[in-house]
Length: 199
Image 1: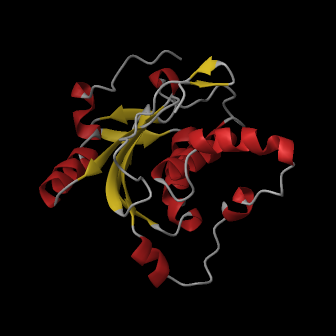
Image 2: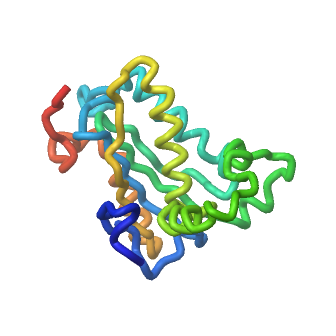
């Protein structure tokens, strides 16, 4: 794939090229605010106290399975400047749920027929856009929803452009990551994401 789109250099994807991020698996996801600003609240005595935007971020996280029925939520935590969570893609879980569940994102993904002269542009955009049903599409939708709601009260709210993911490969790794997430507020003093707030 070309490193350029519309004559602009693109940053290579942080995703593993050898993995299909639509596959059933457990993913450890970290999403940071832009500049690691402390939009979501503060840690006091080892406990997270959510700001208004922090409450929005947490509420939207809990609603992910409503919009993406193939997603199961596991341990997660809202920190002052980032979110940690385990997202499980599980298509069997989706099929076994009530068929009447509607996904709010589905209609937005249905595009009207395009004119012929737009087909090349559409193909280029499709090549660099998250694939439907992928981890990236879920995170992008989440970030977009939080941003839209947060900017009503805090116009400069923004996420870091990328997010970090780790494919959880076995049960031992799963329990280690889960413990890290749940104890993150208690260990905030040593956390690599704990940077002075620049607001």
